[in-house]
Image (tube, rainbow over all chains, first blue to last red; front, top):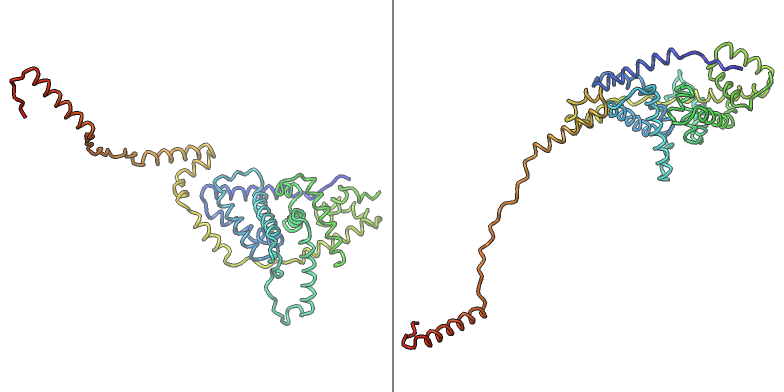
Length: 201
Length: 163
């Protein structure tokens, strides 16, 4: 059966042109364009980092470093790939390093000692009951634990595939591996997640 | 349709279907297969459960002062080198590394030329050297004078020695 995927090439090309153009303006010294890129990708980068390291403070610190590196690299920026590929390559690199450093340090303080990353909910008439909230928290912890247990690269691949809706080719560029390797990573990762989370259906 | 769930291509198609990334024609063909294949039906059910579980994982909004902190760090990054290189940035943007290298060389040469010439070490006159005669030399000199006087007396015995 020939694979037919929704044609979103036009949208991607337009996005490529716009983001790349913005970054090229940053290269020329236009600070406002940097602000536009920051506005556009701040949340997705920090949320991706949070789901990688599962600690809000660390995720924000890494997010700062991502955008700082984008700014530092402006003079040498070359639009050889989609801007988001470059951006998430920086973010993934930093996240993998942070995870590796934490493992190396064998610190007592785990990166994942954070809460869900959500502000404490106030219980009121318009919001879920305490029971519902607790059920939600238990399920959320199961999801977080299942993702946390994935090998780092599988985790990054799943998060980019699920939340950033990246194509295999783009994930491959971010992780610096082949497209078939990404498919294999994702297949194994989802297989593990199905085994751990299918009961939640 | 024979089930090919074990093949990577089929699993990839099922994943794309669950992610809503297949076009309507491909999705319809796959749904027809899924209706007659319990294995694929289970796969899709479980994958959708994973998908929904991941959908439920919300994250906190980014801190309100994220941009302020970032801009403060960026301002701190503006170093003297940045200021120095600013005139060359348009050139570097167009020509890249070769021009950057050339600019660095020009600056380095300028710095070298501006630097005050190396001051030669000041001439330090050597201290006056007094060649003091040793006692032996003095003794030899007295002896020589004695010999000369005796010779003089022998040659001219009438001459009085002048001391």
